Image (cartoon, rainbow, N blue to C red; front, side, top):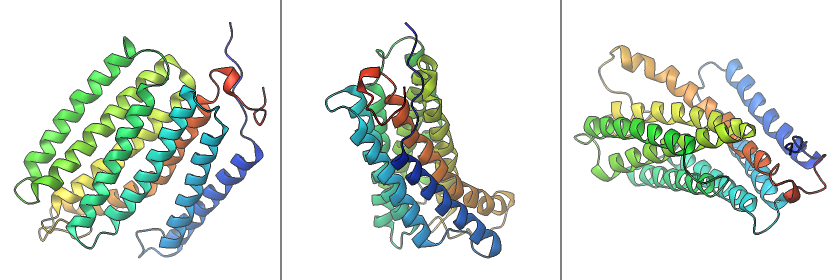
Length: 268
């Protein structure tokens, strides 16, 4: 039996996607015209994030209730909400507690992604289990290195939360790769998560290099790594929206299968 053809986004989804891309492109053009700025304007970040959330929850509404596709779509939409909120709290933090809340919200979002991927598709065995094991090994090494580097300068609970977030993200990457290997239409999912890995690693490096805990406060010494962090940090912030959009797009990958769960909004 051949797989059903890839569905086409309906008009509402296309409008939301174009609006999100327009906001992001406008923000990038604004940054280019003002080289002294390193962040997108707050209102543009909020508007693009809200548009992406609308797209994610709209995808959830398209899924047939009670199916694994609906559970997957709900997990991705809920996780996207928490990741956006967590990123806002961590990026604009004026106190360590707020940053800790941001990291925790992001970690919960990654945990929901892990749960959503795990319950979808074939059993967790074979290539899916191998991909998960390899990613967890890399995550354990990266998390341990971060803990050893930061435990003497930052509160232990914050360093542990950051390492745990990294572990969950790598777990999600491993599960996503395993799912994409068994169902290639999910290729957008590991692509988006890998971009988030890069972004989060850079943000953790900023955190580790900051003796005052805040990512935007640079250490007094200006070594090669400290000079490299600002451009890397800017790149990490810029790739997060496309990464999150790729993850949201995986909802439409899930809507392809089973074919019976597709609604008439999609072309067949």
